[in-house]
Image (tube, rainbow, N blue to C red; front, side, top):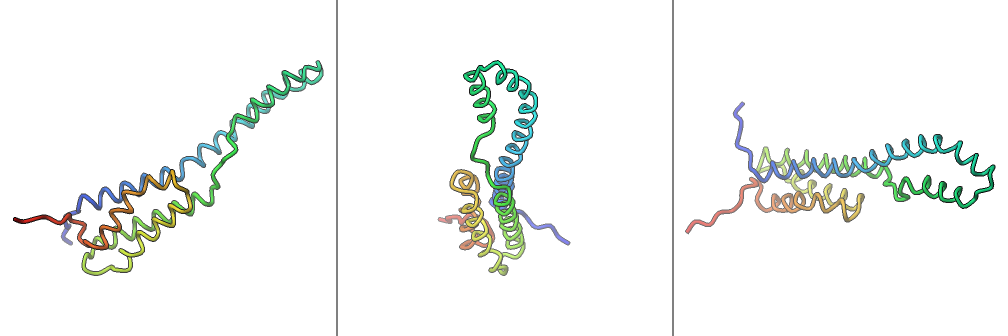
Length: 155
């Protein structure tokens, strides 16, 4: 089997989609770790909460509770939405790679790749979706130029 040459645009596309998967999956993992850390600190602060409550120092008790409640942000991303978006981005990368192996054919994969990317962008929102915007531009470019080679001017 002969190895063909890989277009630099395809490498950039796959790296950008892999970075998009990492950016989608990393926040729920970090938020889960922070939730575990909050629970551990909650157990460590429990004796102080009890003692401050017994002493009648409600001002110190409310500041202690606000520190405990403010440890973890309220806006935790839904992990199932993040997993679905990561799966869609992986499918978009797979479709792009399959479409690049056969530049003349694979019209369906070339068309489905930007659709999967747009759906993943809609699932995760605007800010994380901007990470995969270059991949989306390259996927749309691949619809017009299937070989993923930049057009040249000969003149």
